[in-house]
Length: 300
Image 1 (cartoon, helix red, strand yellow):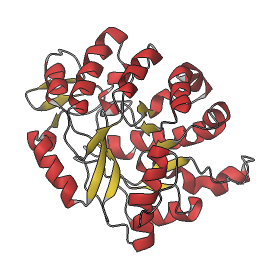
Image 2: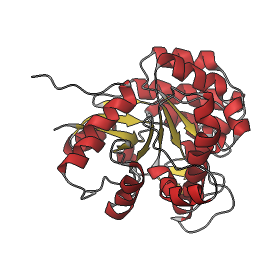
Image 3: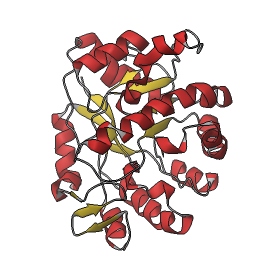
Image 4: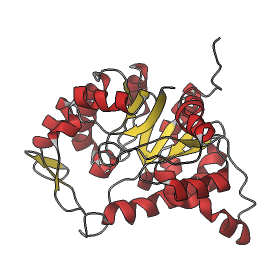
């Protein structure tokens, strides 16, 4: 049965051109990506070829792949006059992608503009992606409140993705394994403490199994944080994790809030080995509920 991948990245030609026009990170020099805090990265142009990626999506058994701006680029955290041209370029390219692609909208978080987000959502974007390091505490939720209130009003989801890596360069794997994971861990608990009380109807999905934060539920309970009741509208996606991590998160949260994400082109989808019922839940039933806010019904 065709399914959904909620986490892919695909740069359209307008975004590539806008990144090449810059003289400071984030920027592209040819196909070499320069970011603050990470070593230069050689981008494979084929990874951002829409026709090739559509073929890969079909080979992955997808009828929907949601793409988003790569938040580690740091675009959302740039000053508004620098962020806007890049955001406009991202939205222009993402809106033109062929099936099976749809996209998450993006927004500047240094100067909140809910009207700009509303215009992108009016074009059919599936929801909003924000960098995790914009939502790490109560101040972050107060600052981003106009964006989150708009999502809640429209019944559209939020996707929380790692933002730029802090600190200096390290091994090629460092950012993905250390800063990104720690951001997601903190974002998961910040949502529990500050996000959910402020936005009781908001559906949210955390990338990379929320950095395995749900597995720390026993510690949360031991330190007075409550019993760790499962929030049916707080989802986690599976990118870059395999059977053991997925099994641990299912034991902590159950099967109903886990959704399939691959992080293509940076990682390939994995067989989580949890059985056909779990596969259907992760790829079909749960993403449908995340995106649409309702249960999927079978048409006979």
